[in-house]
Length: 254
Length: 342
Image 1 (spheres, rainbow over the protein chains, first blue to last red):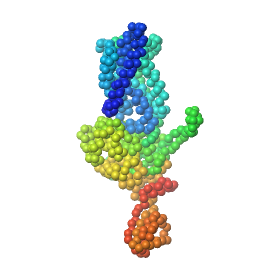
Image 2 (image 1 turned 90 degrees about the vertical axis):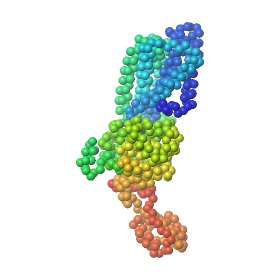
Image 3 (image 1 turned 45 degrees about the vertical axis):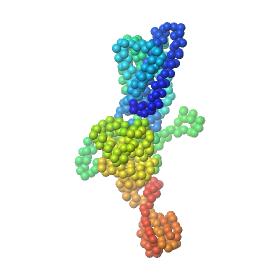
Image 4 (image 1 turned 180 degrees about the horizontal axis):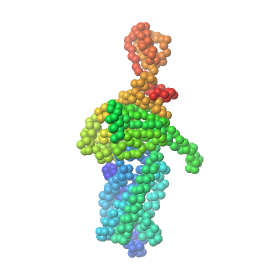
């Protein structure tokens, strides 16, 4: 997948250039808010921009939605057969594919983030606590793995329902909100935030970002444990679902 | 292991590597009325219909055989291939390939076969075939030396070196199909399933692929099960063929016997030195007639007498006797309602 990404040079360049828009919008929106206030829910203007930069960075690393679309489309069109006949773990194959895309984006996004920090003169306020940085990295990896599992699960539901477009779109909207990619979850009522801590989405980009900003360090261990448990649960759900649903696959079109 | 024991006990008997008994496959489909009203109605109430694709099909294939699987569109050939490779599960019946139940999709089984589908590419379109081959090397754990040797062999056999490093999507159909075959054979599978491998190819590419498959079967001992609508593929490659129609096996035996049974006519073409007006008491179907040349189809049993008559009666310049076109023979097999020619 890493090699595939490099094939299309135009795509590589535009991917880097277009990541500017989210930062630009955040800049416009929050500069208006911070005109009257110095601090909003503990965020200064620059920590807010840093927040957007980091969540944007993490969100872009997650390329697993492509798995959901690809798996469901391949099942519907009969192309899924080519994975079934190879001596590979099909989930592992798609996870590796997603990891390839992520590795590619990691390189180019670091480069792009550096440019935007310089251009927007953002005072990048990241924590220097090694424990927090390490915990954030572990959470990011576990979060990416969870998203791969979630999208693979939605994808293989196509064995039963054939078209999972509505499910994918619904998931995308919910995940965008729950991961804090739209607005920092700290801005929401406390009860909402409390409820979200039992679900994996809270730990995918929001908590790692907060840890990198030097906040919420008391949630490191519980966050890692909850994400590990969700990953195990979805690993089991995926294995059982695949075993159960593959028998109704018709492999149409070949 | 069990198969190996059978082979040893059996002594002279070849090893059966594919076995099916009373295999059945029923597809469930939904029927929807046409138009917007039909679409809305089908949201609440869909009509389910069952279509039998394979019916009580039993067959055995031995190691090293090159078997042709023929039948008209929708006969059940591809469904059978899909069940033998484990892509789909049979509705009922028994299927065993290399001692495995294909539907269990065990990696140990998947390492021992390959399937090439003429209408479905298994290569990665955006990267080169060389990169796909490297990926397959890792997937099948092919030792480096063996991989290099196999690749060099296939590159030389197909003269692939010029387009090994360009993206697959830029290859012509013929070039892509050669790459598909190489990808399928790199790990030296025991069985190769081929579903229309020459579809859409020009005569030169078809001939090249036939030569390649013959060599793989003879030199590597790979068992091959081939479906093709091009009868030339079947005729030039397979000694044995299985004919399927409406999901049922209607013939299983040597290609020679099949033609003896169904090839009822021969085409006789005669050219004369002088203009003639030809007529005969035998029942014939005239294909071409002019004063200097006639061409007609006659019953096989009458051919000898007809030729003798012509030679005695006319001044013949040239005479040729051709077997009936293979396509016509197969058409006769498909439309045969007997179904008892096992």
